[in-house]
Image 1 (cartoon, helix red, strand yellow):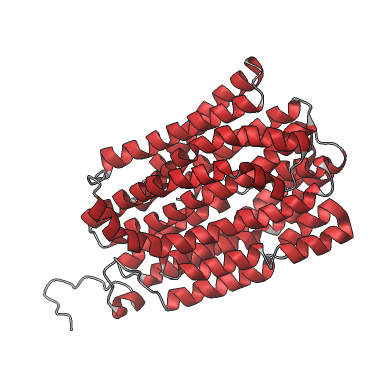
Image 2 (cartoon, helix red, strand yellow; image 1 turned 60 degrees about the vertical axis):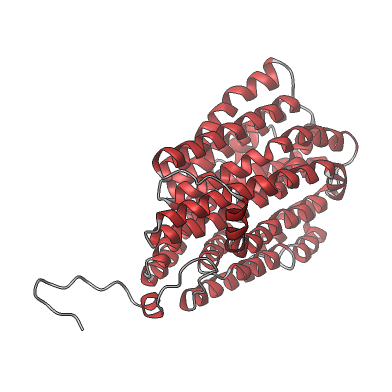
Length: 450
């Protein structure tokens, strides 16, 4: 589940990374800085879709674990409708607030104007991306990891084809990159919804009564999940703002590191989305022994991936910096990211896995506490303090070091949630005995069970 999901994610982010390289090749630092500022804003607008996809995945997977396909289809329909009903106004609000948001990030002059122009186009496609994310979450809930992967792969393929054509061939620069973004988002949505309809029962005919009835269980997980996701761009916004004080070279370096992160650690990003349906299905089936094993194996999996990826980044740090023509401070930041900071990503992985456990065991607000703590108390004072000591590099070091304590908190919350699961509203409770005991082996012919 993690590897197939990561292929889809990394396909998108590899193209995004190449897109960043294209912009860097244009030789204008303000263009690279504009992409950095825009990335922080887009991360914020994507939070709604991520939160809703977590909620829909949790509810659909539990229904499938209970073998109630009608309930699974009902929750899937509600999730898509809520994504449409709330995604469009949310994107519109962000569109009108682009300039103030960029100013808060520290964007000024031409970098501000370029980022605003880029975002005015890309933000129009954000509702499509939200619905596409919900669609892929439904596919993963059914265990159809391949279809979920291909939805994002096709979006990446279109981006890879159109980006050089529009950016260089037609000379559209950021405008070309933005137009490509909208087209790829539309294709992701189409490729996510089609297999749901063809292979997994599709959707019900949406009704206002049905949406209102199912809104409570979706938002019971969705609201704290959205709050959890918003914490990340809020923390990133503070980091970007601090980096902007060291000039456009620092922001460009942070932008490159930001594009490298999901490519290098795509498997870790995908783990949270993959772990959720496994936990949800086994909760619905009353197999808490498998839930406990899934979390334990996830932590081992994270450690192995981090060691392998960190080693590769260290060996390839010079070619990576050369790819983006990074010099001076920008190159130093890239080298720092490809060095010891990569190892500290283990703690982010622990937070991802812990949040997945809490979200799917009915403790979503615990995830909210961890994420907001990590991106406020675990980011702002450390980034400021280390930034005063070591400049722009210190901002990144402080951001990484501050997450250690909250990773331990996420680990503890996950262990407690496994011992004391709380089934949310709208899902039929599983008997307490079933939650604590593995499924009994079938009786032999003629044997009686007490």
